[in-house]
Image (cartoon, rainbow, N blue to C red; front, side, top):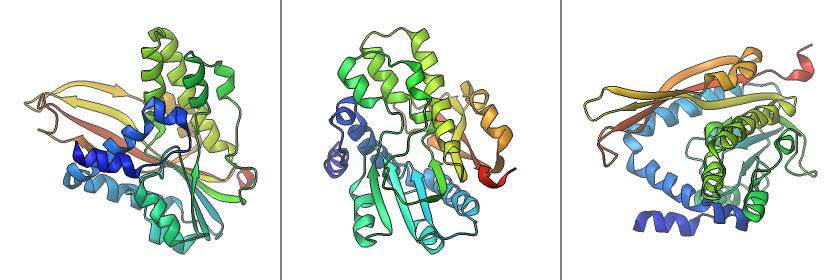
Length: 272
C-alpha cells in the first residue's frame, strides 16, 4: 500500500474526470505490479520493445506518436530516439518517470495528456452512456501537433473500456448496453489508429486465460472477433504469452496469462 501511495503521488493528470473515474489509482497500481511481478513480466516487456522496433523500421525520421506511453516501461525509448526526431507520448495519466524523460529530452520527447476515448469528461458529468455515434469521428489530439509519420498503440486496446464500464455499472447502466459500449470503444480505437493514414503498430492482448490453483484452465476470453477487420488489413509481427498474474500472485492462488500480438498496419497513403 505504501508503494502504491508513492506511485499515486507521482502520477499526474490534467483531467479531474480521469481522477474521479480512477485512472490515477489504476496507473499507480500498474506501476506497483511492474515492480512486484518484474521477473514474470520481463519477457513481455522485452517482446513489446522488440515488436515496436520492428514496426518502426521506416524510411523517414519524423514524429512518432505512441498511445499508452504514460508508464514507458515497455517502450524502447533510446532506440526510438535514434529513428525519430520527436516522440509524442499520449496518455490520460503520466508517471513521474515519463515526465522525467520529457525533461531529459526537451523537444524530443513530449507528454501529451489525452483521452483517446473522448468520453471521460461526459461520463463523469452526466453519469450515463454517451451516444455511440460520438465514438466514430477521428480526432487529432492537438491541431498544432507536427506531422506524424508513425503511430503505435501499446498494450491498451482492451483496457480502454474497463474504467468507463466500471463507472457506468456503478451508475446503474444495464449489461446489454455496456456490451455495446465496450465493442464501440474498441472499434473506435482501431478506426482512430487507422485514421492517421500512416504506418501504425498495434500491440494488444487477444486472449485471456484463467487457471485454478492446480494450473488447470478454468476460463478464457477471446478478443479476436473484435479485431478481424483490422487484422485483415495488417501484418502480424509477433505473438507471445504474458504471465499477467503469475501463480501465487492472487489471493486465491489462481493465475492469469494473456496472449499478446503485435500488428503492423500499412501507410494507407501509399497502399493503392
